[in-house]
Each structure stands twice: as C-alpha cells, then as structure tokens.
Length: 320
Image 1 (tube, helix red, strand yellow):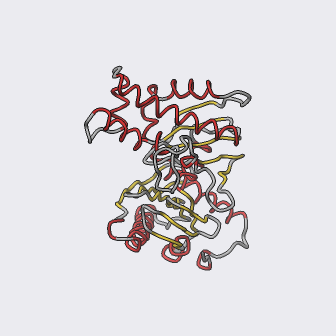
Image 2 (cartoon, one colour):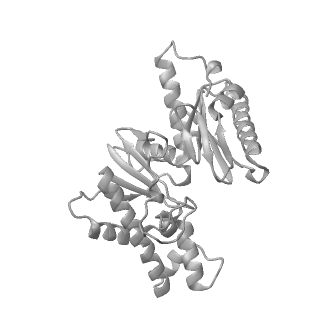
Image 3 (cartoon, helix red, strand yellow):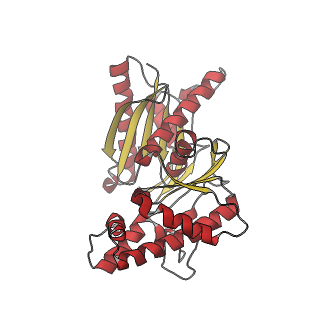
C-alpha cells in the first residue's frame, strides 16, 4: 500500500501518521520532543521518530513510505528546507529536510506548522472551496495562514501571517517579540487564561475555565472574555482589510469554546467593518490534527510532482 509519513512537531510533543493515497490515516503515533535536553536532542528525536514510522510502514504494509512531510514551528525556509529558528525548541538553521532525506532515503517536504495546518484546512477542512481564506489558530500564541488559490503564502522571508504580532493596544502589555500591545498578549488562549486566573484568584484557572464561567453568566468572566474578543476583532479587521479573505477560519484551543466565542466575535467584527466585505467566520474543522494532515498533504503533493517529472532530482541528492 503506497503511503507517506506525516509529522507535526510542536513545542512539547510530536504527532505523526502514515497516510494512504486516499488520505486515510493508516497509523498514528505521538512522542515528546524532548526539548528539555536541548536542540540537538530535539533534532535527534525527530529523526528517530521518522525512522520508526518508516520501519512500521515496511513491516505493516510491505513497502517503505514513498515520501514524508514535516511541519515545524518558528521561522521556516520551506524552499531551502531549513528550520531557521524556533524559540521554543532552541534551534537555528537546521537543515531538517536534508537530514530527513538522508536518514529515510525518500523525498521530504518541510513546512511551517501553522501554514501547514492552514493548508489542510483550506484543502480538506473548513476552507475547502474558498479561493481566499485566513486561518487563525488561537493557542499559546496567535499566528495565521494566508490561503490563496490552493496554496498558503509564506512571504518573502517566511514571516507571512504573523497576525499575533499586530499591535492592537499601543503601549500595552510587553510581548516577547519586543513590541508592546501585540494581539496574542490579549486574545490567545494563554492570555485569556492568565487574565481569568488573575480575575478569579485561582492561579490554575485557564481559558477553558473562563469560557465555562462566561456560559454560566459570571460578570468577571464576561468582562475578561469581552476584552479578549474586542482585541481579537481589532486584529482580525486589520487583517481582513489588508487581505480581503472570503473565509476566516478560527482554530486552536480558544475555538473549542464554540458558541461562547463565535457569535460575539462575529458581532464584534461586524461592528468594526465599514467599507470592507465581511468574510464568513467559521470554526476550524480539523482540530489538533490539522498540522499532521497538512504534512501528509505536503508529502503527497511532493510525490505527485515527482511522478509528473521523471527528471526530478533523486532524493539522495537533495540538500538544504
């Protein structure tokens, strides 16, 4: 059975799958990144995990994976196959595509985690059929993926879509990026959790607890939640003014609040638009599997392009 390896590397854990030609997830697995042991250990863990998946494919399906796709956080040079920088993982300029190609002996595609998740949402998820979409996951931070006619825009230097670092409250809360008042300091799941923990006096409270308190009518929770929604709406209106997406896909942990989030968010965005066209604002469809599914799509697309071009480079010759 022809299949590909799909690997989604996060700050603390890795999700992986073997994906068949029809998109079926044939095998799933998870591993810790081991980031507490340093960047070299993280790279070694990725290579070992990919090799395990490769071996499993041979043993279970009688043939090796035909290609692999990997999604990683931080700054990614997808064209050169280099994981340029990731603060959470501590690496710089890792030639990850070349390392995986050498270890596995198959073609490898490298992508940015959020853009790869957005790619999956655009092709098989909530953005399916939309020629222009913006995917915004609200998690520990906030990033974005700009979907244009079946592809996701990386930008000239790999920074496209960093909506979390749009300043929505000038002079506000300091951000690790060096600015003050960035969107993700007010509307990410971690920011909402911090604000609610302070408001309710429970240091262990998180964004999910805040959403539950909002649903029960707690006035302090409603205040915290509305402040986050107002900041998010300000950031989203800036983005839609620049990008004019047809569909705005909201994902990540905060989107799990469902109806507690989406009706007030739609109202807040609607109140702010003037001449702009209001996009459909919808929840992501793929949940935390988006990055892994997107990595599988990258691998399958790479394989398809290799099949179409018999003169393409031999995988053993690929360098970053």
